[in-house]
Length: 246
Length: 308
Image (cartoon, rainbow over the protein chains, first blue to last red):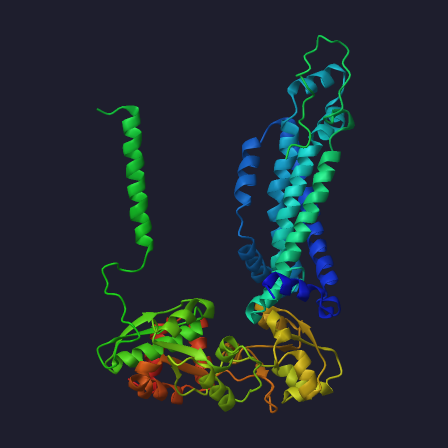
């Protein structure tokens, strides 16, 4: 039997569906860690990103952080935090690591979404008498939503892939078959774990691609011609934010 | 004449040259060295013996001991220490590029044997290892010192519950959790196996790198601490006895290339005879607590034991 067939055989074996390390339980732990980390990172990064995008100030700092923080060696950082915070705070140490990993993508998604909006759109909103807050909530956020969702998508993928290491510090997750299988040299188990993580990442990516598409404000989706008052208007001057840019 | 393009290409060439120079400094091998002798070469004084070690400080100390003793006996010794895990160094050991390697009987047997291992006592494991090793390798005498799994508890916990052997855990009324590396759950000495052999009910927690801290913090009641861990000297912990030989023994053993085995056996067997379990733990304490170098620790130990 080749290794892939053995990996699938391992996955469907009954031992994997009962007990403390059952696959559904591992999946739940994996998703929980991912969700909590991305949520906390969003609460931190998205308002800051919006502020940077709305005021246009602090852009260099945001770009620098987004770039540099992606290079964090997550495994090393997690072990370091576990050593510093102690064994009684292992979940906190892991979540801090994943939050730090998710922040760059969310920050970038938030501020580029707002940055990409044509200034003339903001001008026309001002001309209509909107206050700063109204412009922000009614114009900028909806138009910036597709890119923000793109940032969420990128952050989710990165965190799902990295939560694999949580199994090393006893937090479970789909990394458990990999972390246990390598010293035992059970490579069907290792491959099965890897396949599961990859499958989860792909699934989440597909779902979010659909969400990203749906996040484009209704009147701006391509394929639906917008009605123009005057035929003189150049049809190439399409509305500002490009929808669902990958 | 220097045009802008000319200046740029000179600069680029200079940059590449500087980078090449810097990168070549990263290589630790001297390209002018003679290639190391093949395993097919004859034995005898004068041939360079290569001593290797794992990327594990305790193993490195033992390798230093072997290397310095062989040097004192007149051999030419080259050290290749801190290579890595078995996947990294075993190919070199098997091919003869490395001649002497300090290993552990049980874990090496688990690594090279494809079959189920049903032996656990030190002598049986040693015999099985000798059978399992390829022709090119020989296992010399094994030492009393070991680096094997254990079921370890805090001394206070042992006193409160009157524990001496693993089987005594069955009488503890409160829930007992054992922490260990993740693969422990599937080993032949796992908690499930302990239930069969001793009748104890243990919950497993994959504490991995935090096992000792978790035991000291009271998160777990039993921990799988390797028997050479300096914590046995520095902390108040005690390993429970294993009268039924549940746990596979893993004693320190020199693995040598078969063609030099006869030449080095006297030197290395004398070391194994003096390397007891407490001695190894003390050597490890010198490394972790007093932060002495492996070379210094080895030198002092050899002098103290009249082996040089």
